[in-house]
Image 1 (spheres, protein in one colour):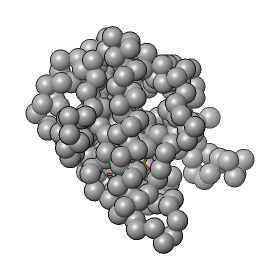
Image 2: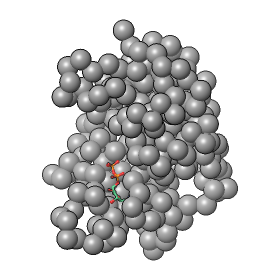
Image 3: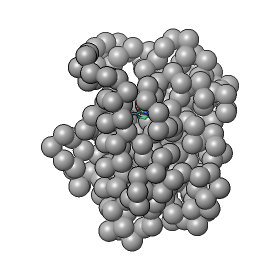
Image 4: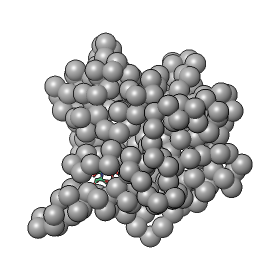
Length: 243
Ligand code: UDP
């Protein structure tokens, strides 16, 4: 059984520019609570793409400012998630790599581990606190620092394909592959820095679709259930395709 996981939720998984979809967030939170109840330690990393992505701003906007906006967007998402956990009776703490008054707590590895060990959900917001990165990278970094067993990437697509399945009907989905293959073939899993970090730390990733029923609880039970629909990426995996 996985003992400690980092779950990456993109901003678009939980809301749009028009606001939050409570039915989706409720389902995410309930599934994560089920994992915590099995004594799994869960650190979340939340994105901000529903509000703002630095790289999508207009070309003459200063990238650093744009990324700072993106990081603040992740904080709003994290606070909303934290409150949804509170409404479900689950303790959750929002941590950031820089001080935001008394709104969040500064991330510190030892206290983060204590929070996880006490059954709290740790919600990492504001990425690494530096521009030019995405929240995928902090997911891999926190997984390495916190010695997580796996990074669960909850996405809109149900795994890793050899080409874009929305454009190529013949796209093939991997069941397993190595980080080296993902990097060499520039497969669209996460950003490159996240892949390199996870590869070096030898922490596997599982990429799955958030849209499937109970997808988070099922992903959390990997690798016990061998019949999962997503893609498992790790340092030494060989290429195996889904049927
Ligand atoms: N961001 C950043 N540094 C980080 C993490 C995020 O500057 O370490 C900014 C960046 O502008 C990014 C935005 O925050 O586009 C939102 O994060 P991300 O794109 O990862 O959100 P997601 O796509 O997962 O919703």
